[in-house]
Length: 400
Ligand SMILES: *Cc1c(COP(=O)(O)O)cnc(C)c1O
Image 1 (tube, rainbow, N blue to C red):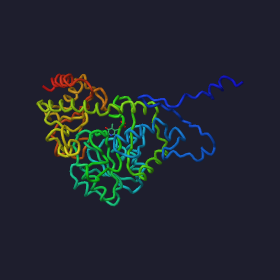
Image 2: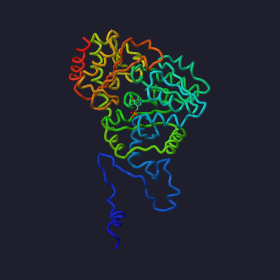
Image 3: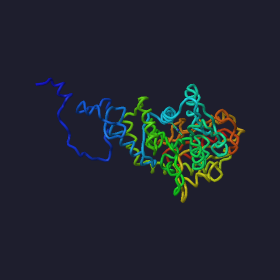
């Protein structure tokens, strides 16, 4: 008769097979058991036919990876602890000393900081290109260019580039193309099919799952999706060597949110466009930036890719440029005065957000298509549109 502690730890009961329900199981493990030494020696995790260690995948993470591949039209997926770590993983997996990376000049700021603060010290250089001018990109592609980042639209200024043209230029030059697809989220367009009928695909699509796939404002996670098995394996091996992991509960939260991603995307899209159009009628705003608005930089590119017919799709972000006669303290007071729009960065959750930006500090030169003034970015949540409009209206009193 064994001690009860031992029996509790090595309990013989096995639940019956075949349990089925709407939600994915949460499988947690650091260690994974093997039935024999032979199995331990021969088991493979790289092709997802088995399990070897918590870091190398569980039924929960495999399931999430497969569903994200379906969402984005990819074939392989690696999960990372945040969207930023997905960006960093791509850099670490693919770049070596002497290589050069090209970043759009309106890119997600932390990608810039990663290049400046870490990669530069390892001999990886970076340059910025104007994503709205393909000739500028072409002139900067060199024999050292290994990787080019694309973003559609730019994180804060929301210019929408011609993704297909930029992708072709890079690939003709032999450079890998990585797209930060957090805005499109696999809903607005398909990164591996940029020109239906003709092959044109990015090599890598990363996403901050933190945003739409989670949708709750409570999970940090990222994904790196590919369609090329060798490219995937380079990324996967680097991921393994770095020991990157995501928690099972977090993976399950994203699995739980994925079925509603298209509905949430559409609801926030409609609300965002209504607010953006209303903001165009407000005298304090000299420009409203949203790719679905005629006149917003890159609108035609957005229309071709995301709205070939009908309304199309766009995410929950828009920015306004506030008349330069208002000082930064006045603009800050406007943001402080908002009540439903909370001050915060990570969008696509239920709560609407606002952030004032200082474009002068972010960009080498003031972008030609953007009016002078102070830029404020709104991220629209799931509150009723009329309440959000009333909130902006009451805060505008400080700019009267
Ligand atoms: C939020 C965001 C990221 C990073 O996501 P985290 O999970 O917060 O690290 C990357 N790219 C874009 C465009 C984002 O908006």
